[in-house]
Length: 253
Length: 262
Image 1 (tube, rainbow over the protein chains, first blue to last red):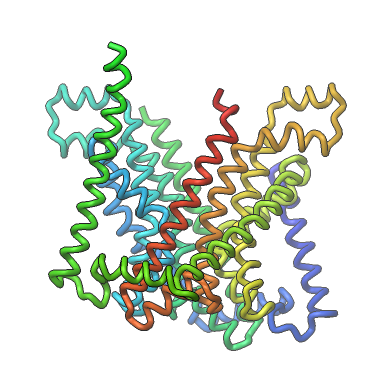
Image 2 (cartoon, rainbow over the protein chains, first blue to last red; image 1 turned 180 degrees about the vertical axis):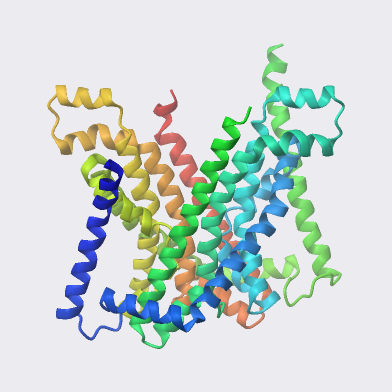
């Protein structure tokens, strides 16, 4: 009951703001190129749903984000495990990682553009670069926190490196890998939309920009609402998944 | 005994650093080989010498990369400062009162995942293609990490401190200033560090999209004219800004919240 109240209270402010916006568009901002009434924007959004192009463009953004994230995980998790296991490897690669990591992924977008041209590959490569570092750092930290006695068990059983990685380390870092996944899902979507806004003519970000360039404030606002909703849902799903994994692993003996 | 106790860690540190310098050197050497022996087309990958040459000539010529760097740094810092002031202000108010949190937090959580660059088309349509538009979006994008971190830090003030404040009959402003903000300082600084990263990214995106002078536009133009050495010089400068700003804030964090760990 209280949580229902909480949700209702959370809705008060957005509703008041939307109402103010609605009033503003009917009084002072009647012919604005930027703002339209929220009701009109929602109407446009539903029209876009029926039209169908929005699904294809959303699919493009989600697919590139997913591919980039997968590519990053495939490269970063094994490297993170290796760096977590070997202090020497971690020390040796420290400087290289610290030099490359703060590089904003968007700075590489022009390079990806001349290497791959417009399209899927340039976007996937930049998303993978952006997601690689947090996954690498988090999986490295996760391996460092594996219970040392488990590693000793591995030694006692004379496991080779592969068996140790697959049978002992991987299962015990799973909860932390899902924390990394949750963070990278947010990063992947932000980077994807940013690249689409800035250069790649496809996906949700491009829908937004082309609406602006054709001076169509109703579809611009519809796209913004849609991007916000997709971002919110994706983040909520990733958080729910992470919490669920966390619970499952803790409860398991 | 004392000698080895002193020298041991230092020597180990030297070895560690030496190792990582060697690895970085190996990566650069690989770049040299890849570009000189044509493993990767020169259209994409310039030789290291060419990139350094472009960097040096760009830094020394007027209106070149040096000026672009300065403009980007300026944009990033001003946007970040505006965002930090707003973020700490709003975050303090939201974090202080349970009631405000209940009403405001859900909306903030909804807006937070929205990419800052998605607001750029609106800002272009509202303000036109000019520097203040970019600054607006930089501040908008960078405000969230500080705001949420401040709210979180203010909300987690220890109950005992609140009792102390009540016993001393501190007013709300005095409570925020003397207990709330110092208590939230570690959170605020961590948020500001994240904000600075966001500010750099949004500055570059803004320069690319609105064609404002700066490193973002410089790298985009270099790519469009296939000047890979200038492109690499620009990317190196952007990376250097990111690296230096991160380093400065990490140092500031260590100095300012030293009391927290003691």
